[in-house]
Length: 162
Image (cartoon, rainbow, N blue to C red; front, side, top):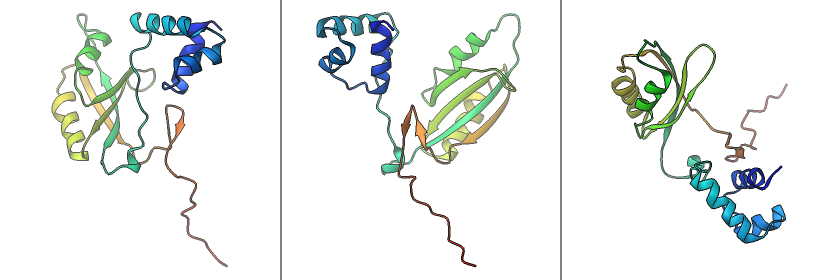
């Protein structure tokens, strides 16, 4: 594995590793590590750094939904054209072209179910190429981006005695 690949893996594990930490873990000198990271950023390979937040542990209420989108293409419109329109909405957190029973897998976020529902019905569904939407609301998140969330060790089932 070359230095770039090692750095990408380590930064995905923890983007807060210092340059010195990364240098020690990759057996490279700090200047080389810093230069390589700058190169990865300038080439657009590293697009940003984000914290993984467990909103269940905060006072802030967030509603997330996964939305299946089916589309119909014509000669002038491609999947990329549709994606370009959809990703412009700030409510859209992720958008993927997928194989299977539907075309796009979209994750949206809002302050309430009503807000998410209105966004889908008012902004997404009217796009002419979209023929169907199916919305699945997140009920609970146990693991995201490789990180286990919350305190899900408690067994909240009721005990049954004979």
